[in-house]
Image (cartoon, rainbow, N blue to C red):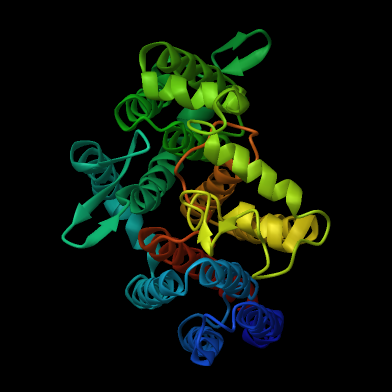
Length: 427
């Protein structure tokens, strides 16, 4: 029943893929060979193959998660294809790697709760990946988010967030009673014993160190936010997110005073118009493009504020600013639809967490859901000038091999959690 529903949910994906690629092809037919339309056939074929695979290994898994991920990926590849067909081909190859990782994870970790026995190993590996990024990271716009191995450049932090979520799921599940114990009150808010605030202080210190060493507010916010969300789910104590929020604001204020790169990001966020042709150029052009889209956009392949002589005028248009391209060519309606898709996707993840009947599964799903929510908010907020701009990618949509591979790995874990929960309910 679940897989039949999933198959029906794929129909909008098929329609969007062929309509989108046809529209872009018609707009740029003089530049792109007709064989480029084969992107649509390849995309649909890949996800139908994964659907058949799930019928065998996870027949009870949530029927909405994979179609939603496919729809978001379709929008991403369609827009990347509009920007640069060569990048779309590369993104499709990375998507195939991600789907391969999804299959491997679902076969090898069918009893995913065994990960609870290796949480400290996962935590150590997650931290090591971040340390490697700090030591060997490439300076891109002042931030150190990726490393290069030969001709391949990737972001270890994308995989680190999954490993740390696994660690926190096991750790918080085993310590939830101690962390939930109230021994005193602060302005009427129940507080745990001081000794149990150690993990909160440790994660704050780690996030602050990332902010200082990687020069990126978004990465620091992402990891600290995942911890606070999972701690709240484990304890139901509002004290943790309240204290954590205060600590993070204090750390960001301190970083503003001592780190020139962080100060520059904040200053550009507050007033990009003061240097609109240099430091504030990206965000200013992004705002112009979003405004130019109007209600229904200029049409796929017809945006003109984003391009000059066929080339993007916004640096990193295919990664950090892909939402700006969507907003101009699909308008407010298309941009809102994309945000709604992310909201539905995250809702389904949190529903998986709520329906899980064991602490480890519940916390793991909640942690991965928090990661998707925060990552989406950070990048959308950045390009719309709600928060300082960061280099984090928009899940499934932005160009980036490590991002899309890691996201499909996280999706595999969520499908395993939902499959186990629904199977036990059906039996």
